[in-house]
Image (cartoon, rainbow, N blue to C red; front, top):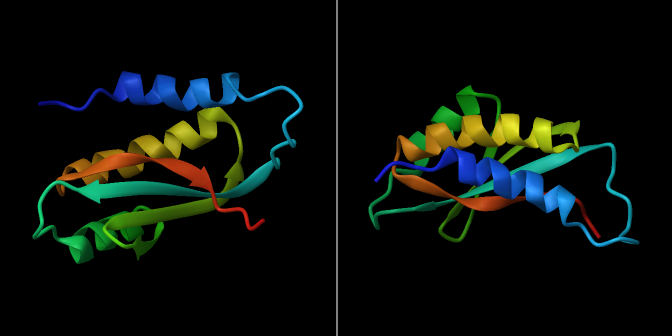
Length: 107
């Protein structure tokens, strides 16, 4: 089964479109975390993290998820999607799948 990048892109753009009115304003720039989960139990985490690092992401793990961080970058749908697409293409080649993104903001 092939990945539907267009649906993933729409979801990112819709996140911005559907933000509640009156919500705290987003920063102009911030770090963004992209999350990926493995398809298999014997997933090759080190290889994926090395490949993502080669593309400029800082990588870590949160339980089974790989967290690929970039930035600070502009917090716009276009900027986020540009990095999300690159990270997703790399992750899919290692049988990891996207599980969303979030801003690496401390509250």
